[in-house]
Amino acid sequence: MKKIHNMILALLIALSILYALFQAYLNLQGVDVSDSTDTVWSLVFASLVALWVSKDPKRQYFKAPFEFHAFIFFLWPFTLPYYLVKTRGGVGVAQYLGFLGMKLLSFFGGVAIYFYYS
Image (cartoon, rainbow, N blue to C red):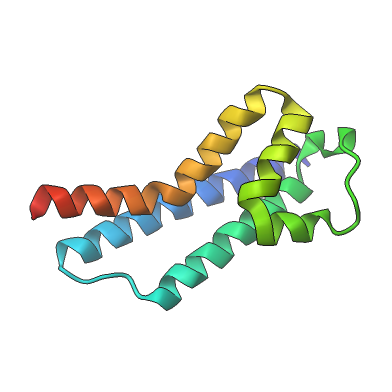
């Protein structure tokens, strides 16, 4: 179980980096990422976060309602920190900031490219 949990996290990190590089490349070309591409990235990210939570080995110590994974998928910025703090304590805050950083990596990379080359 722990192996698939780590594979999902590695995939999430790799896709975050690839999407950030893709967005930086497009910004260098003077083109914006389309809204549909941003939407697909948001859905993929939320899906992988929900899958990561469902395969989390520490989940056994957390009593969740039946629809908790749907809450994670649709409202991950609000429900993920609750889950991480409940299962990991203070370390969960740092992990949440890591997830948030992965999600915002492409945005901050795009802003940096814009200001550096304009």
